[in-house]
Length: 492
Image (cartoon, rainbow, N blue to C red; front, side, top):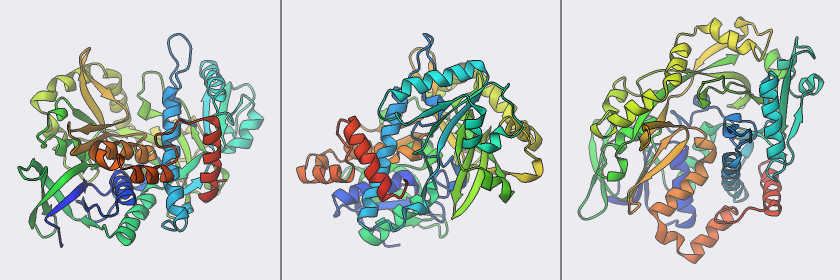
């Protein structure tokens, strides 16, 4: 390995986040020096891997947990608008790379698959109609359809309506512009662009042992090759920690006060994967339902068409589980190692105020395959066990942070932790994660390289790459950009 003595930026982790940050930085400042390190033998093997994540282009088109019903009966939609905007920003980057010829065939990682929400029972059906009426009035969602008709639902997703009658109370909504994304393939594509077009390869089998402040430059990163055992100390002006569930353990070693009070709660997952080609071909949709009463947002069940490695698949889940590991290829001591004096109170507070989550996880861990099949039968009444296999999904670490009211709280989503000067940044959390990676890394870019974004030429180029960056989104520019990008990405 031919390491330089120092770099402008070191990215820790070979996942979708590091790929976005490094590529955005190189696009606006090609001369910047970047080192990307990954402890496994290849990129996109943890959270970014296709089988380890939901694969939905999360744009809040069908995910009901982004639109909770308030105590006054209104539907909160601000989060849905934000996530929808963030996903379109990701698509704008892909469209730019495609126009420039860096991406040859976008359909190797993104495909059009319609997004649906489907619920049963009067209470849930009334909620879905209120959500529809609230979102439909906004230009981002004005093409949404809603129905309580069994005939229409049969047209949308026939697998779910088999053996159902008009007497069953159901409702569904639909967005035609939904997508299915193979984030593993996308991540590999972005790293290939970095290596071939910007001379920025990923150094695999390199584990980061520590990140220490340096008197002459901002940070010294201690590396160890997992195959040879050889150690290196590399200097960097900026460090980004994007190591998925492993980010927290590394952040805790960094000497910045902003890390104080953060903890993590690991959650594993499993899918039911269909092995019957006839069933797979009958379904071409993503169908999300509503989490059960008291269940956490992560429990939202969905029946999804996926395209992985050029092959159409059908998944149902996710089913949550518990493992003390923070990464799929992590250590059983990860959770124990993450407990520090400064986060004991937040951890205990989060546990006390999330007892339903503990109960839910215990129930999920105890489920066998037939229990999982019973959950699937709520979607597909005639599902048969021999048509489905159980597949282990990825490992997630939910953020636990200090809270003045209850000591600590469990946070669903992602959060960027940054030193005051922005020289070190770290991404914690999970969903919607990969779908909003470009928007999140634009925030990191602002924190880490504010001087670059004060350069008028670089700012103009960034706005050409991401037309929504620092721009008020109106109905006119949203629809214009949506049409332009979908045409370039072959998503019509």
